[in-house]
Length: 171
Ligand SMILES: Nc1nc2c(ncn2[C@@H]2O[C@H](COP(=O)(O)OP(=O)(O)OP(=O)(O)O)[C@@H](O)[C@H]2O)c(=O)[nH]1
Ligand SMILES: [Mg+2]
Image (cartoon, rainbow, N blue to C red; front, top):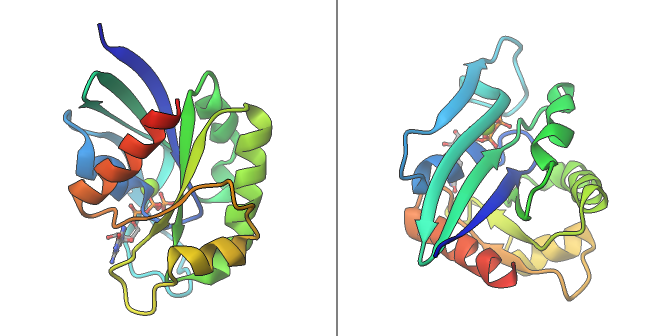
């Protein structure tokens, strides 16, 4: 029989959450992307998640229900809703934008205090120019040695799979 898990995919604005879920989901991802109306410094993408992403993937005998959060704090009312009964979470950080580490740190605190569940930090956009290594990101986030920080490229299915397989082992 397969095990069924609810996994939350979170992280700051534009960290790559929607891409992460789309790269691996075996069903069409349900997403709630809307046009970005205000200009945001350094951001060239056109859309942002306003409520959630939902995807699903089967890895070995585990069925993962993937719930992506919005990154913008003005949609933070969704965080609690999505965190309900989660079994674990992945927190993505844009390794090429260390200005977002404070926000990432805050999200770690919010999601770990909501529920004591296993989690993995994904040092995303490792393919981007100037991306910080997982070790550097760990230092920037001030994480204890027992917290797992994995390299990730959200646009590559194999990379996303490695992160999720690691999390499943911890569940
Ligand atoms: N180079 C590179 N670009 C990435 C990667 N992951 C995501 N991106 C790009 O980063 C931008 C943001 O990706 P999204 O998946 O929309 O990020 P998000 O975290 O869902 O963003 P919000 O929902 O707005 O918070 C897009 O332009 C992606 O193409 C990656 O691993 N490498
Ligand atoms: Mg998104």
